[in-house]
Length: 204
Image (cartoon, rainbow, N blue to C red; front, side):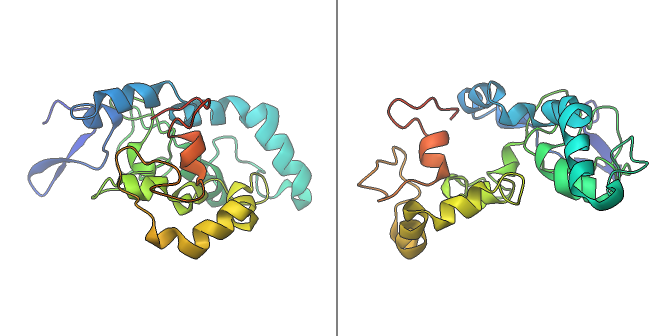
C-alpha cells in the first residue's frame, strides 16, 4: 500500500523490496516475537555501537596503513559494505531505494523502513522461506565465517561437521519437532543455538 514506509513506485505500481519482520508477523507472530529478543535482530545496532570502540581499531591494526578504513567516517567503502553491513545489516529508515549505501541489504540485524529490526530472510531466504535452509550450517556460514569469526570453518572440521558433510543429505530437515537421533545424527549450528536443545536457550 502507498502508506507503507517501505514502498515505492515501479512501473505504475506500489511495490516493496523489503520483507520486514512486521510482514512475517502477520502469519508467524510467535517466531517474530522470539527473534525480536535475539542478538541477531540487533546486529546493525551493535555494529554501529562497536564501530569506534572495537571494529575500527581492530581493522586498522590488521591492515597495512589502515587503507580499508581511511576517510570512511560513514562506513561506505565497498569492503565495509560487503565485509560488515551485508551481515550485520544497515539502518534503512528514512532512505530510498537509490541510496546504495543501505539498499539492497539482507543483513540479519537490518533496521527496516517500517522501524522493525531484523531480517527473517537472512536465514529463511525468499521465496521459499524454508526451515530446511535455516537449519543447514551453510546458511549460518554465510555470515559466521572468516578470520575474525571462523565458526563455519571450525564446524566443518569438527566431528559433527564430518558427519553432516557425509550424510546430511539423508536427514529429515523438514520435521516440525526435529528430534536428535531420529531426524538427524549430529547437531548443526541451529540444533543447539536456535532449536531449544535441552538446557540451551533458544530464539525460535
